[in-house]
Every structure is written in structure tokens, then in C-alpha cells.
Length: 177
Image 1 (tube, rainbow, N blue to C red):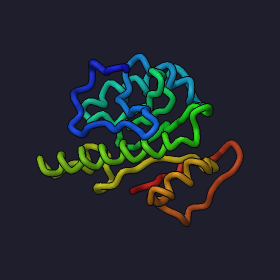
Image 2: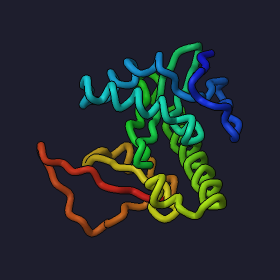
Image 3: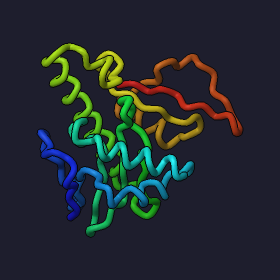
Image 4: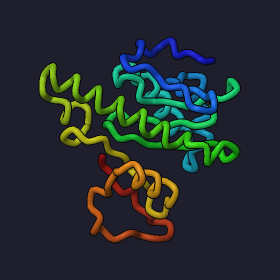
């Protein structure tokens, strides 16, 4: 079981999944693996992932992974602007509910952190990029699996009337909960 020395203890306990896998905070040693999973991986995305993990302690550990048999097999990040993204499950471990578990947990943690911040000074929407108390994510057009998962969990496209693009110019669409 990997621990993250740079992340403060989470206020919300992390769940153990029905198959014995655990949801845990991502740590620096996960950075290269998470970057390798992303289809647009680069030196810049590696730095972004590392930064997201570094600041995740201030975001109540919203950069999460699923670990099974001491191996990281899935992850989700929360970007500094507040968006959830880079949700990925190793193809060998798909259809086990890991993406759903990560999205649910990251959403709960994001909303809980926003509520705590609101009760302190009322400025969460601006400071955390929380879009008026909503969780939000960007999904690339044509990512049918992500769109289906987000729909199942009652997320909605921010502007469902916006026309989708195809080909190389596929756009990221904002989804909110």
C-alpha cells in the first residue's frame, strides 16, 4: 500500500471496494504511470500531473487512484482550476466499477472541500474554480465511455445544445454536477 507523504490526512475516509481494492491518494511515484496512460502525454503533462498531486493536499486529496494487488490500476486528477480530469482505468481492469468509484469519491471530496471553504469565507467559487458549488469536468467529444459514466452519475453537459466537432478538432465539453 503506497502512502503520500506530501498530502495531509484526508478528512473523509477513503473507501475499500467490494473486490478488496482500495481508493487512495495519488503520490509522486505515480506521476509517470498516470502520464503514460494519457493519450496526450508529454513533458508538460508530466509536470501538470506532478503539480496536481503536489497541491492535492490543499484540495482534500482529490487526486485519487485505485490500487489492487499493490498496483495502481486507475486514477483521476483534480486540476488547480477545479476541474476533474484524466480519468483512466487500465484496460485489463475495466468493467469493475473503478472509474465510477473514483468519479464518485472525487466528486464527494470536491464538494466537501467547497462547502468547508464556503463556510469559512464564502469565496469558494472564485478561488477553487468550483463554478457556483458544482463539480465540473472536461470530456473530449467522442469519448463515449466517459459520457456514459458521467450521465449515469447524473452529471450534465454544461451546454447540451453546443454542436460537437469531429476529426482532429474535437473539443473538450464541460460537464457539471
